[in-house]
Amino acid sequence: MTQVTSSSTATFRALKCKECGEEYELAALHVCEFCFGPLEVVYDLSSLRGRVTRESIQEGPHSIWRYRPFLPVATENPIDVGTGMTPLVRANRLARRLGLKNLLIKNDAVNMPTLSFKDRVVSVALTRARELGFTTVSCASTGNLANSTAAIAAHAGLDCCVFIPADLEAGKVLGTLIYGPTVIAVQGNYDQVNRLCSEVANTHPWGFVNINLRPYYSEGSKTLGYEVAEQLGWQLPDHVVAPLASGSLFTKIYKGFQDFIQVGLVEDKVVRFSGAQAEGCSPIAQAFAEERDFITPVKPSTIAKSIAIGNPADGVYALEIARKTGGNISAVSDAEIVEGMKLLAETEGIFTETAGGTTIAVLQKLVAAGKIDPEETTVAYITGNGLKTQEAVQGYIGEPLTIQPNLEGFERALERSKTLHRLEWQPVLV
Image (cartoon, rainbow, N blue to C red; front, side):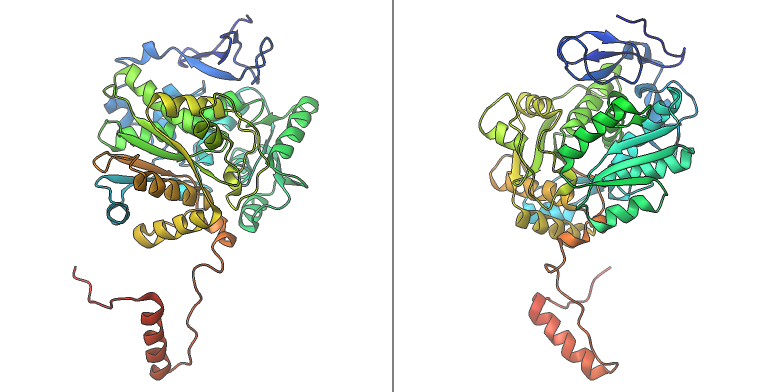
């Protein structure tokens, strides 16, 4: 094994293969040379017990960097654009609609700076990229990651080139171009884009956040676990429901909970993990339903493009977590995804993208099947903003009632609205 190094204040000590256990230096590596298994960061968390406390975390910045000792960066001045500490919303109206008693929404649809959870992983990846000496950063993306990489690279003064499928939603394309990166639109799906980026990463000395920087990048998702535990008063929930794309987010939320247990910040308990996929790209859900321990790649065909990864890198690990915690992995149709988006918006005022619609639709499906206990404290993770995927709901949410500028026109429109929406126009008691 190559000698590993880190700063005196850093707790991450090596990269380690998840399959064979071989360790590597803390470099831009992501695949084991011996068994081709994925590499992940390992830490000396024992050194944090007693040194990192609830109070010391709460005294930190109002961002993911309050958890810096748990993240794979050595610097004391990370790239901080205010990412993290997003609301944990008590979703009472949605809970009543579904028949639950204690439902919360972790709302990364308002994350900074680009309105998705990807801001977390990119903040970590680019901080580490800068430490490793990269001056150009890149990624393969279904949209949200491109937005985040371009924005945070601009803030950090790094050159940026991102790769996206050519048929991406307009909001996500514009939400990347505005930051001035080089954007390469590839005629193919995400898996094809990712394969191309792997070739580029072998020929250009760039930091690809989800390729050669992937072990560091993926650790940023742990902060979604840390924040929920802190926001629940230093307790873990009973059940979480989260979207599945590569499976990395799912596994890292689990790892975040385990980190806090190991350091003594929360009491140990089993949290049930359930995952959500679109039927048009559901390789992990299919493996779960068929009780397989391997993933069969699929060709994506769904409106939920942000989670349409046909060959998920961490799929088998997501399967393992769902099974050992007593959770589930399920899939829903595109029509159900749209209804999920509408349901969350109508009950809680949260406009999510298609990945969030998938999560809410699967949540509803699991409740109906009796697979979520109404008494459980359940957290649903909403990972992106609906303004990015407006195309998904066009034609399904009605049109404005256009009138002439007079009272008669308004009254006719009001009667029509009552008929269309079956509204009970009652005064609101405050």
